[in-house]
Image 1 (cartoon, rainbow, N blue to C red):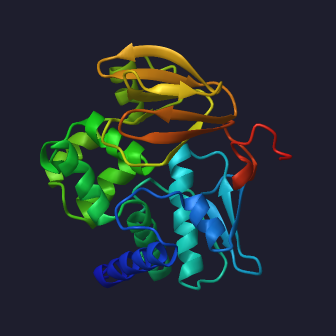
Image 2 (cartoon, one colour; image 1 turned 135 degrees about the vertical axis):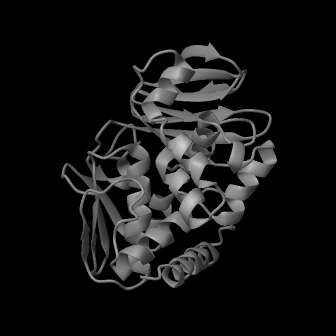
Length: 282
């Protein structure tokens, strides 16, 4: 089937949502905040699936607490897409990160919506050009850095750039796809005892970053970190690395930006807006 009209429709819908909420077409966004702004309640459950959209008053999104951090964010945006298009209640089973295997129009629309909501074309291209990087010559750490800025997975960004945006040659996509996030962590950190790695460099423009306990966060050397949820781990070339050790929030400040780092327990279950609260009764 010809997916292109559906992909373009999804892209336009993502732009419309950003416009309705007063968000520009460049900066990274928080899919949970967008869901809340649209009146959707989001909750994590210990179930083996991607997510579930329940149409109703209020509408609800249920996400698997068992999936990787960035995957949950993409699935949240995907379910918001079902809501925006007026689809009925849907269950999304476990799928690979690229999620290109469905020929169901509603799924193609929701995937395109999520991709463009989290990875807007102008924003992704700005992220490369501002750093002097090019998709055709990008290395794994560069891809991880931009994926970190937009809160998406490594493979998700590769798929969006190579298939949806057509900004990356196929041979480059194949070569970069041989690098798993675990392999990148080991290359960067020297070991693989962190559950995940998020890299924020001096060019990033995100206002917040989500982490799970035991994730590593790399920030520019000399960045000021306030709060007790991040502890110093090591220094590598160009970065101080911290480990997320407990639920809560921290502020990371550099001369170029300030970010709120929000740490949730691994496999957190409950309302999404409680995930990083030190006291869930607050």
